[in-house]
Length: 325
Image 1 (spheres, rainbow, N blue to C red):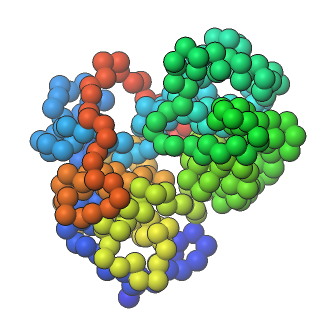
Image 2: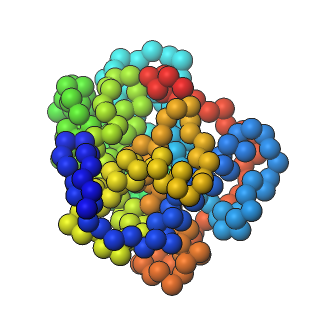
């Protein structure tokens, strides 16, 4: 057994791999990144010979390269305008609760600059209610956000707006977030609120960390989402006494060695390796990929929902300035 460091403790490697699927994890990460690089370089498709990757939609190996993350960076956090740190945090969480570009643009069209100072939950609610009456979707279907009536409203968006009021107006959570020394501290703080579970809290702290407001270490903390847990179960026949998060740390720590072992030319963003959030996401995408590649490995999901559709508009990619890419 091998000991290795992860964040704040030492983990003992005593799990058992399903080698074929374990190797497929690294193949998927490298090939999905190759597709991204070829598309970004303007090469004509198809960008892979893999029929599954040609036919179905998969997230990028680097989370930051996905369309919604790029929109967040360019339109919510770094849009060329200066906002107080408190408003940056508010803007990020507001955007991510709906996770839909058109909803953000609808609010901007009706409100103007979205800031904490001009937030009025009733005004926001009326705008979104009008959109719903016109049959307009206001939530992304990328993941399902919690929809219980935690604040007593029948409509999900009303409860989310009440949540924002509770967090930012009543509790001044922005001040507490800025005092957090570690991502995990902020995760626990945000997760303590209604309507926010482990998955959403981890997504939120990751997005907050794209900004200049905080600068948490990315290699200290991770949370396995439901899709990631399914992927880990397909990749390992036994986790030993390790948690799902331990497994993600293991992949993060061993990526260079595994790409080299499998003779895979993984093309990094600058000198930036896959981060914990990326390794977590790749397990989720691996679960989807295996539904077609290895259908005998059963989980509670059997089909890949979305087919790949070529987008005509080209994304001009940007990264948080503090990454120095």
